[in-house]
Length: 355
Ligand SMILES: [Zn+2]
Image 1 (cartoon, rainbow, N blue to C red):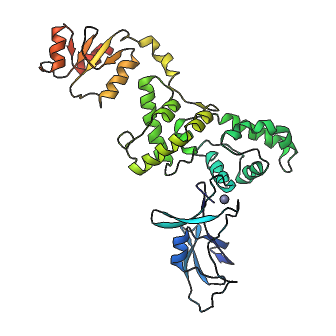
Image 2: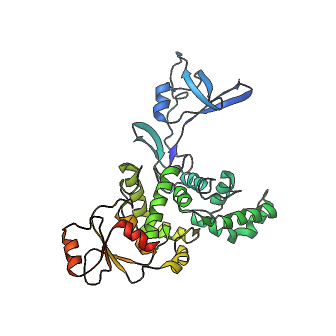
Image 3: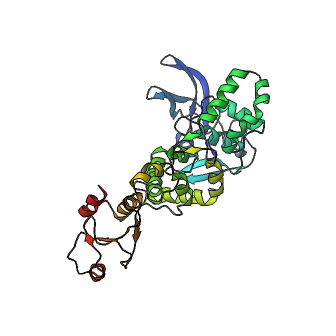
């Protein structure tokens, strides 16, 4: 069972030697592929090869005239092998897949925890699937957060066969170390459907941008942003954005609570680095017209705010500068600025000002 509750059928056959290794199992991937290959009954003869010289694959099934009976028929499991709840066959991108219908299935939990602690996610050494399963069975793990409270079971862990004090201490140490992480690893670890490593990095950079602009924590932006859309997250399609937004709206509190266990690289600390450079303090800027130097208005706003300035939407007596590349424009904002004797400056002038 994978982390989303999909059960993958596996073919088990008589051992065969391919390129010096004995092969006796191969993934059948999903129900569609299983049907397409014509897997119907026990005792069928299959042709096996190693894809990329590593992974065993079923190439085809030999035709035979065995009569299919109740005792040899192969059908997808009706009950989940982990929690014994009903299974169901659902469509996933035109592919039939077998899933466990129980949202709290222990099998899913193992897949999720295993993904969460994997190298590219949070990265905790020494938490193998076998160990995770043991801790689940002992009732110590039912969520990601529980990993950070495993030390409460230290004494009991010492007594588990095959563990040893040294390896327990090492494991707990590696759990503590994992508290220092980055937002993209954290997001990737959550097992949000359709959100892989690349997407997690895209989401994380976007949150960072907003976080810098508004002087917030990256993680705070992540769970508080509201609705991410494809324009924000270049490279993520609408379906991925929907999956992300659905996940956050359902699990906001859980994410918030979990994030408390971590020191996620944050921009709050960066504030200290720029306090010496708040040369725009007490200045209010209004921006109008198109920009050439900065990618968009938000980029310029973030720079002004980093230097301690404020940005307002309309020109008033409180405005310090109107930024407009077209200084001679007769737009309403230009006219108002002229009327109030407020300097109109170009982007280049602004860059001069902060340098
Ligand atoms: Zn189940």
